[in-house]
Image (cartoon, rainbow, N blue to C red; front, side):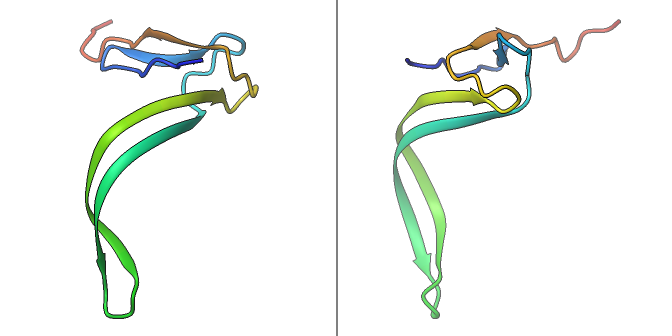
Length: 81
């Protein structure tokens, strides 16, 4: 099942427990990386270009639900009470 990505106006929410903040995300990413090896052979990624990315699953950390994630509106950042 494809899981929609949150946007600047939406966020994930677990429909079972209401969790809004803790999720395990399984994603597939295809990327090109510029890797710099120091003289000891330790690699460090200095540049990364994501060519494609897809979310395979999102699991709620609180109740372990996998197929119960929905997109909901984010609270307005500039709203006054």
